[in-house]
Length: 381
Image (cartoon, rainbow, N blue to C red; front, side, top):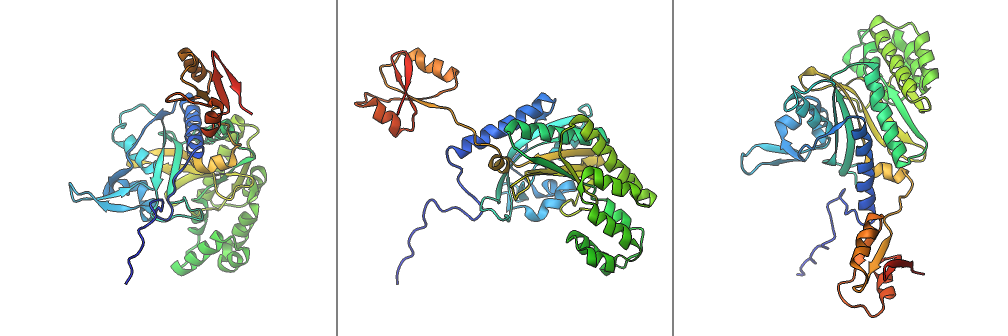
């Protein structure tokens, strides 16, 4: 009989990682750069807790992410709690309770960590960071456009290249299908075919809607072309209202950000369980993961709202590498005020904790590119 070796202390649960230098600093700096953009447009920052009671966190819009939540029991109250898998439902709760009397439009921003019960393709996908904005109160194309415009400005501040915003209207396909009395199995099969973008299956299953749905499947692409296809179709009044709102939102976005790259997928609905209007997914060329997503929904108390949630760790993989602070080694005999001046100038200073025989060698060992001498600094080879 042999004893199992003790686990490696560096071993973490699947889906969780340590973020080490310089990546941790880069992510924090990127997140704060986003928050500065949001604050400059009047979005006030809130900080909801990581853990809440299950029956409040996962109610309302939070019900859509209930399957992604870790649950545990509160040892004090014996009530079930959940770790947040998404911050947006918490903002909805705050707006409807603590900020119920705040003037509308209510503009809120947030940044923090979320924990998912199961992850995606990447090893770190069970612990994710989010940074975002929510605009609560108005229901207009201009409000939707503001959310997209601020997302574009934030990504520009990070230097993320080749960004595109893909717009969709999740209620449109269900509204079209409601015009025909499909039996439940037929409706489910048709929704699966639309989800897979299977034009042949849609043509076979959609009956009288087949020409319209097939046309909409092929319309996905640049916004101008997709909207032209929508405008040329004979749509029922309930669906035309949705199509017109999508077109008005595109017009409001391009008026605010003329050079933005917009695409439209008129009947995409996958992953938009609680959304009620125009939605957006953010992509960057060469990146397999989406950079963020958001859209229009009904907040708590059925209040209109729209928002955008960005993924800082994904953004920073798409953004140019930011140089960290240049490190300067300070031997014990340098002028004290030199360190303060260097830090004010953007350097990172590393103090010697005692006499050093070879300051240059010690500076290199500690990852410093510069060495302080007297009242100045010199570069190390």
